[in-house]
Image (cartoon, rainbow, N blue to C red; front, side, top):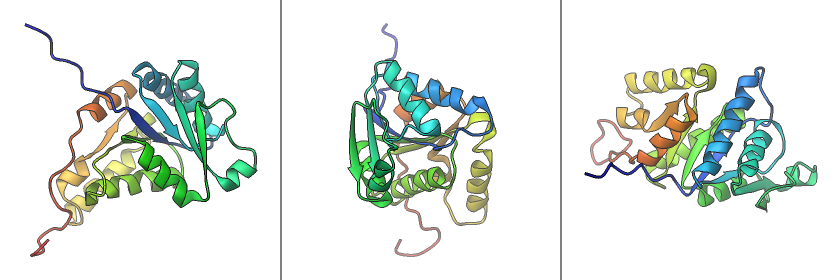
Length: 202
């Protein structure tokens, strides 16, 4: 009797994360671990292309472990000299909207590390597109030190108040362990319900 095969990892993952380091070294440690694991699993890292903050940490780790790292940087940051110098390849997008769209096109799944407004916006946009069926790609958050517990609570509130179905609350993988998070992405299945609640013809 053969053992069940491990879930198949996505070929490429877009990682959203802060361009700052955060107030604790645990954030950089988590970014480093995730980058190393992505490389070990043969998964291409797609990210925002800079050498700043956690973005630089996750890219450095993946590269050091022999992984492929694709950076998509916007023109303004490229002109400021923020492009990571050691990437496998990079693209320059005209603006942030084009940058996000290109990252989404290159990625089979999405992971958010801790970050600020941009990170949250990128994660929630990707999840919204999955909810709407514009793509069928898993979205996850690496819950370093409980960073994403408030987001989990907000999604539960939205569900309890009738603005979101449980299937859409639960489709976002929020997991503190990087290896288990990647396993969950490999096993993820898209929801099969529409977003509308109690509305005829939806």
